Length: 487
Image (cartoon, rainbow, N blue to C red; front, top):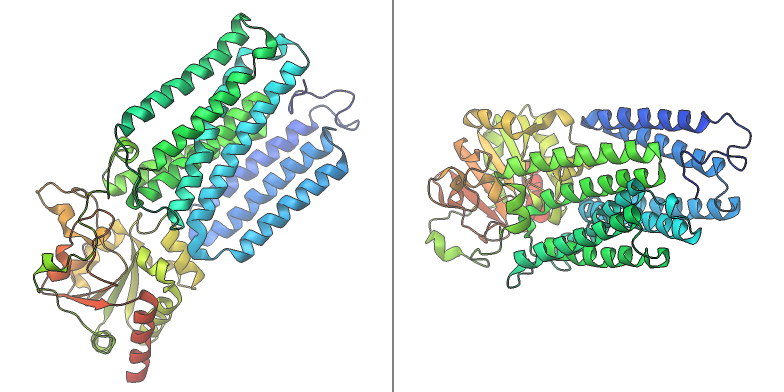
């Protein structure tokens, strides 16, 4: 059985020094670290992504050239096919659909890791050498299969939810008990693999079967975990699945004894777990609440206009344009409604017009305003909104008291003052944008329906709040037209 990092022999390396491949992997790992570091700031993110891509291309190219696993023609065809599909996705998928694309990528990464680990087990069994399947390899393969299969099936469900195919949470009786039983069964199957390797209690021909059973159970577990989760928790789910795909790749690196997989997978897994923690803190929820709770599934839903008892005051694009004419500081708070309506270009145009007229314009970005971490930032960047205008919650909140007008576009729970209420609430303690502290707040929504938390928003009936009903893109474009007409 040939390992990627240790199988250097007569058929590998084409006469190059044995340490050459390790050196290339080291360079690739350094490029991954540099790329990840540059991804932490919008201005350097594009360059960081390119640096990481170069590192991966270097690692893949070196591996392909070093080992004679398949014929060069087959390898070249596979690389060209993958590159073609990736290029097509990059050019055809809209920015508003990036969350579900990221979900699919997470799933494909986890599924690929699980299959590679399974192939390594089959390779070990086929040569009939139990010594070739050490406890480390088998244990890593079991971990890879469990995490990879959960990531694959869970990511498919998450992508379907994000794409609107199956958006509503799927609740079923004793669901948490089902999750625990499936997880316990998957762990037991993994331990069975490890026991067979360590003690040699079973014939080698029976060795691989439990692994595929493990994949089946773990796949069902992934569906059972993600299906009941509501849309409000999708940013956390995407971040967690991203971490899982990295951990699956890292454990595959131990199966193959591949340094670059261990480095890359660990970086993705660690950064994904950190991001998951940040998302949970932004929602004031624990990871356990996300995975086993029922957030956003028990609200009133639908039209809740009767809750406000006629206290909501509506406005028009003409009135909003007049308010903007006299404002000296404007803060725009985009939400998922802006993404759904693809209103980012109209919003960017309005912000540019205001800035040209000497108005101080800023964007207040809540960490979970979109369907994945950084979703709103990406949409605004696509519309050429300057990075300097995008402010995080902790930076923008103290400035609302000096703001003349706040324009909330398609956001709900992230601007809900109920988070500060002492009464029990799904969003109690959640950090929100204190938009009501501004002189005037204009909220653009299709209707008075609640957000994913399923609760009314007292902001809508405050004395300084106005409701601009309508589709985000149409409403913002109407405001832009009226503002230009009055200039």
